[in-house]
Amino acid sequence: MLVDFVKYSKDVPVIKTDVVVVGGGPAGIAAALSSARNGAKTILVERYGFLGGMATAGLVGPFMTSYSLDGKEQIIKGIFEELVTRMEKQNGAIHPSKVSSGTPYSAFLVYAHNHVTPFESEVLKVVAFEMMEEAGVKLMLHTYFVDVITEGSEVKKVIVVNKSGLQAIEAKVVVDCTGDADVAWASGVPCKKGRDKDGLMQPVSMFFRIRNVDTEKQKEYIAKHPGERPFSEIVAKAKEKGRFPLARDAVLTFATPKKGEALVNVSRLHKINGTIADDLTKAEIEGRKQVMFLLKFFRENIPGLENAELVEVAPQIGIRETRHIIGEYVMTQEDVLESKEFDDVIGLNSFAIDIHDPDGPRGRFEGPRNNKYYEIPYRILVPLKVDNLLVAGRPVSATHEAAGSLRVMPPAFVTGEAAGAAAALAIKNNTIPRRLDYKKLQSVLASQNVVLPKRVLER
Ligand SMILES: Cc1cc2nc3c(=O)[nH]c(=O)nc-3n(C[C@H](O)[C@H](O)[C@H](O)COP(=O)(O)OP(=O)(O)OC[C@H]3O[C@@H](n4cnc5c(N)ncnc54)[C@H](O)[C@@H]3O)c2cc1C
Image (cartoon, rainbow, N blue to C red):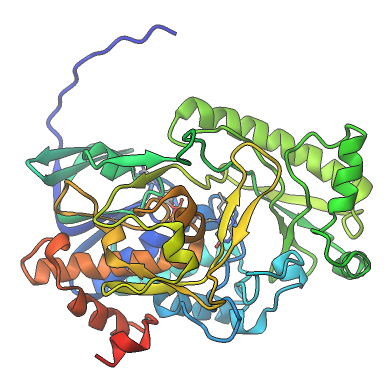
């Protein structure tokens, strides 16, 4: 394909606000609510007609654990807890306190799968809208982030496009919750992709939802095969006979709150770069082919799935990893595994480093060695080079390994909530996010029911 270039310029209308949050997934939902509730006039830009990101558009679920690794204390609360409680009231979630590992809700996995939160993506969409409306967040749906206008070290305007045409949003602070650091990258923030040795990123997967799942039959099979990854013997035998071409070794079906329904996390495509349109296009097409193959395979081979029927395929391919920004601090696997303490801690997480092998069938799964949790520092939200920008969710400043733990949804809510509060506080205090007094941020977060270490609360 021949590529040519053309210069294009146009006068576009300018919308003014205090904070613009770009991307309405778990991080963006929390960021927008937290910013608006702390007094900042807030706009949330989202490319789809609904919020939730991977939780809705990617049909990903359950919310991974919000508890310590030993399952004893809930360590992620704040906006995450509020959302789950509200969804539960509309029969759209089961509170994590009522969900154990080794059950259909955790796909029968045990380690690091205690107290996950099964939920209904349709209820999440409705509840997220309700919460935005109550907080006074201005939503701009069907609106795609395109570019930035920068001046010195500041993002002066964010350029977006929708059915009304191109528009510029002028904000005092911009929060990038696109999952891919789209705004940060366009603004000149240094970013890194994938693992150190070859830049390969985690594989992508097409989630789908099935019904007519016989969980009793699944349980019987699992009970007879202790210590085995769910249904892995069946998969291994099919592979030997050349009847299972996917790079996966187990069948993971996560029961949802709806009886007999489950979300399937088995599809896998390697070497897809989620920031390249051609790769995304290929993944959407191949991902759907994999779903049809898997459905047939399940019905013919997997106990409990003999009568499984397709309910829906995710609207978009699930992207586990793309860019990681380089921020004021880069979180490492030692920080996660050794539970390093940070003065600027803004929340906790316990989920294991979960790396689906970028070029193989298995992966790595390893949590904090103290069997409890680790601390998330504020500085991983603060990018180098740009002064009025914060980044939350999947692309925070972390190595491939540390991001393997930070990438799941509960910690995305944590970093989003902190970023939103920090954006509003920076404006109130007439400063930039990089110079914000983190103690002020911590006291705001504590007042929002965010769980922080005792030593911070007692200070
Ligand atoms: C296959 C797979 C399985 C997973 N399994 C689990 C699991 O079981 N449990 C769990 O807790 N986590 C799981 N995760 C991880 C988790 O879903 C994501 O990492 C998490 O959703 C990240 O949140 P986020 O808000 O940073 O990004 P996202 O959820 O990706 O949200 C980003 C939002 O920004 C919007 N956006 C992006 N670019 C633009 C743009 N240019 N303009 C406007 N809007 C834009 C998107 O539409 C989206 O709404 C899984 C992920 C994948 C891919």
